[in-house]
Length: 391
Image 1 (cartoon, helix red, strand yellow):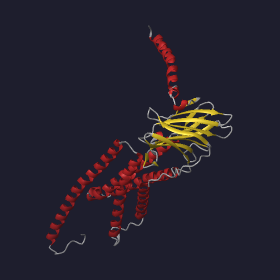
Image 2: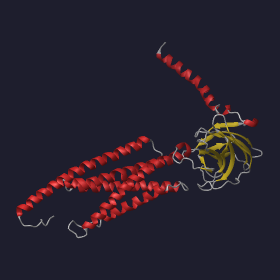
Image 3: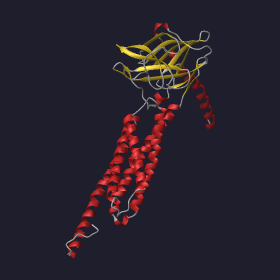
Image 4: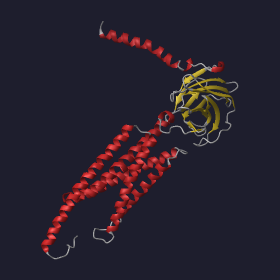
């Protein structure tokens, strides 16, 4: 058989095989069976957190009966809710299933204001028949009926999972794209469901924030300090070492300011979610870095009586910025829960810079001691009994 005929047969076979696969995917939530002879007219597999939603909507009575299924972290909570105004956590009228011991769950209702969960209370939607149970597949099931406004057809839904410890609902992950994207629109009449993509945008901004700060405060500034401390010992490197030092520090500061501004923007986008230590160190590093830039304009000449004190200030603040910057980078990596390979890569980069600094420390001290020895011989030859004025 010729190749074109084989290709046509292959495409026909693929076209015939495709519908059963789509049907199988669509039937995943339809295969669920519920206790209490509960039956729902429509279901949809939600795109994140391995969750699904089943519902029956009585348009005449604007009554929505739902079953929400999701797998929590170990002994954690699951939640589903509607937001009357936007695809976001703030404003969501949530049903949250929390463990109450012995594998049992109960439903609590929260009208979420801002990004703080607050205390349980009534929702803006009248509710009834609330219940929760742990299914055989490890997913928690929330049941309930909500009375919606007349004429409701499309709603904003939000769903989530998180830890539960010490009788308290813990904060869900704020770095995992699955958690950040668990929201969207749901058409109660047609069953169409669309997922929001804002979470991935936030995650990209967080990654950008991390990369900018790691490159600037964590790599460029240490490199600039190495140029200043060690290259100036070599006469042939003067004044190149100074320009390399200034270039690294200015570029590092510029990139760092971009990373700092991205962090401020992320903080404004995530009200109620704060990382106080990380934020405060970041503000301190930015402030000290800005102080260093302005200090360049006040740099005395080499023979000025205040140059010695300016050097002490400049070196002390510079090393403080580098130390705080590296510490904050590791804190940021922990917040972002980055893969171990990225932590390892940064540790290797820092170790390489440290090794270079250590080698240069030994080499430059050897050069300095050799010069002092030569200067001492020159002094003894003069026989003046005084050290040279240049010392």
